[in-house]
Amino acid sequence: MVASGSAPSFAVFFSLYEPLKAALQHTESAAAQNSAAVLAASGLCAIPASVVAVPSDVLKKRLVLGLEDDGRSAIRNIFQKRGVAGFFVGWRANVLKDVPFAAVKMCLYEGSSALYIALKGGDSINAVENAGLGLFTGA
Image (cartoon, rainbow, N blue to C red):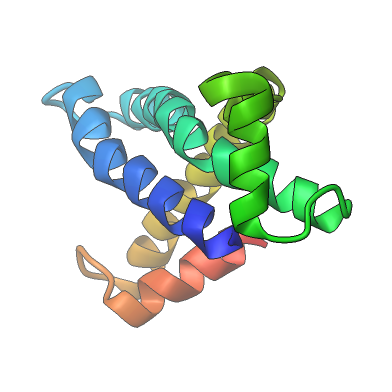
């Protein structure tokens, strides 16, 4: 159940993040412009990612709290009692958490990546290094 919300949410976030960051950066890639683009893109991308993640989170919480016996009955009961809006209970609170969290997380990731590339020499990092940096900054 958790993966059904997290994976699509991450997919939405990262499919929007790079194109939006690139669109926000100017042709001269000054550090301040890059930082502002990372901050804005990550904050903005957290909103649609949250829209995707919250319904799964609502279901998960109802199951963990013992309010429902299984996922199917939870979906049915939420829809019968509150309609589609019932799947988005708490969305505003999640967005207030997700936007700054994503901004900080991605600024740390982008900064760590730039530092690693500078120390390593070269202009890119491979998938394993990228995963390690993601793990480091996510922690």
